[in-house]
Image (cartoon, helix red, strand yellow):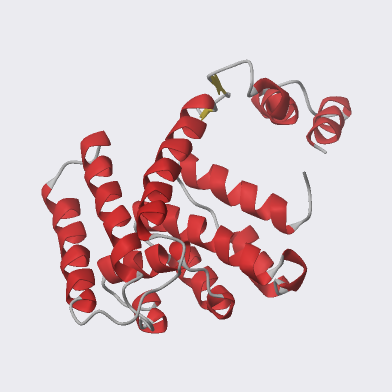
Length: 226
């Protein structure tokens, strides 16, 4: 599609080869370049990072999956009377780290550790208030919901989770919301995902390269593409 548009752009009577054409041609060949290049810079200064994005995603996966392994394979435990207080404490700690630390790898590492603990802690609740957490103005509680759904995908939470992810204002939260959404989609079954949910995700425009890559991967899955 991108090549066709580029050719049309070149052949149109009043158009000439310019940055638009170059960008479209690059978009067309990008999928074949990702294994060869670390990054590529498009006209206008837009830079596409390949291996760095994939490495960050894989590193985050390892942290969260280690938390899942540490929780065992028996699913959510019976209600632990201290679990909800621990979730709220971790949610508050997450927000404090966001406020007190400058954006960067050190802060992301701290927040990733908190997310891993939320993955374990939320499984100590038999029936957490996912609806309340997903719609909460408290970013820490929304992160707790994403952690729980990452660990224990609930098909009935699909629509509300998708809505929360699309509206999510915090980059770290949205990243893990997309990861949780991927697991919930698997639990629902691709063929049973409502078209409205797919359209909502297609209209979502994350700004970070990691989130763009994850969302693109999820949408490709929803369309049944390899």
